[in-house]
Length: 116
Image (cartoon, rainbow, N blue to C red; front, top):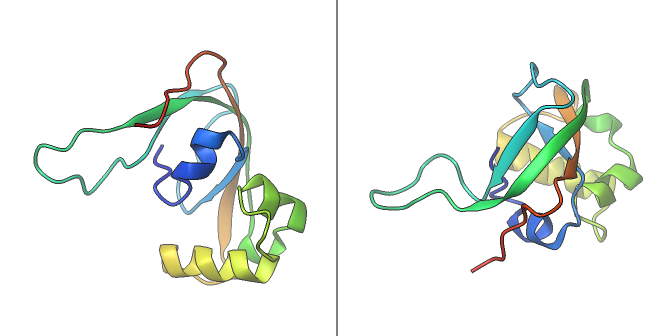
């Protein structure tokens, strides 16, 4: 799973929730490798792993239903809910009323890679 927008938050361990337009079939208990960027790599570039994460929950909800607590868990403690929604929509070409997948996860101890 790519964390290109929140790479810094992942390395710092500040993120424990992510919202996605896809990944609806992700099952709790699944272990995923978090990467900096998974698609759009140029020739010769390699995937940079961040760590492994374990999925705790995955549910659909409207993007506009995000709480301030979840904005913080997304890794943006200085953003308002409106700021987060605007950023998410800009990056994902979507609308605030659309349903997204809210994925909660935890870090697998001992899998974190130091950022280079």
